[in-house]
Image (cartoon, rainbow, N blue to C red; front, top):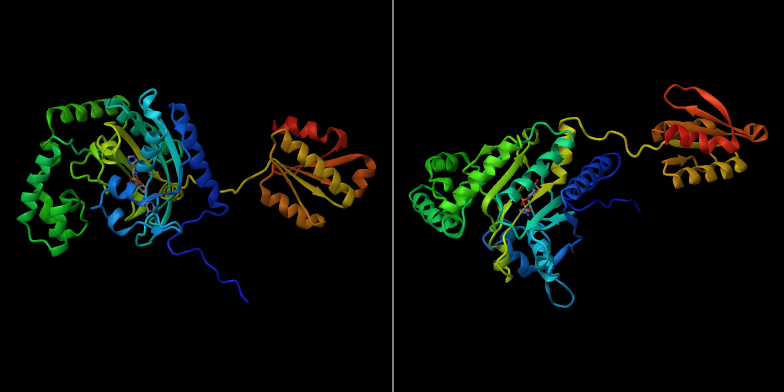
Length: 420
Ligand code: HAM
């Protein structure tokens, strides 16, 4: 029998050394969120199908074509989350977090699932960090979220990303715009599918990538010309605050998002080196979503940033972590008694917070030193029979190659001093 299992098509998995970049990005986000007062939510990977169809919207590609939906053994319709926002809101409402201090500030991370055509940067299981502020209409909160995403990307070393910004209006002004847009689109020469889309979800037509459609919608009415007074004031304030924080953006009145719940502020981050899948993150307001899923009136804003595309962007800009998980110390025991001593030393160092590893299986010096090299350790501790008799270990500086004999009962302290 031969081993020929492969991960399912379109699934992205992270193995060393690449997984270090993924983890570094995710950990940095945890710190970013914490610094701004966002608490962590650990959510189920699956929810009732109805939550997504109502929350994300029946007319979206995500719900109509891309969900992983199945019946469980109890006959319930279950869907693997295609995104985080509606699950976050479900959880906030279920646990009454919205009855405490507002806005509720939370973040989450993990896999999401969409049955998309798999290609570089587009996966069927992908990963996001998601952050939501629920219960405030203040435009400053919109800008807080945008700034957190922006600063996180910059902290990871990404310098080339761009921020596109739009407002999609509210339940007062959006219908007026939608009607104007539909009237315009009905006059165009479009194929049957696209004409059907004009009736169901006209804003999505603006997002069509085909050149002939693009050319035709060139002069389509723009949502920003239809904003009501309140939405316009909100949008202006967002832009003013972004400018205050020196975050550059592009006004993109054709920016529409793939999910139905958006109102007012919407934004996307793009990375120019990612080819066709350049959308590295996106988000916006969803002031009507809570009511849509049966909750109270509760505004919200947040974003989902694609970890997979962030890792690709870090690689493209050459700021990805290159080493796997380097340790500080690598133990090289030569012989049984030496192994016992080194095992004790390595454990003691780990308990003192120093990353340490060692060679196993009675490896000879050459193989064990290769392990030390590969580990990225700053110091190797070599212990052979003669060293044991003399009561000293050889501590080798892996950068300079210098080696010194250190009394066995001092080795841990010396290394703690060097690395502490
Ligand atoms: P989204 O734009 O659908 O928004 O996804 C956010 C990000 O997830 C995208 O910009 C992209 O980087 C990444 N992404 C989406 N699909 C895939 C895929 N198939 N493969 C790889 N990466 C992907 C949302 O999900 C909203 N829930 C964001 C949000 C939060 N809005 C408000 N709060």
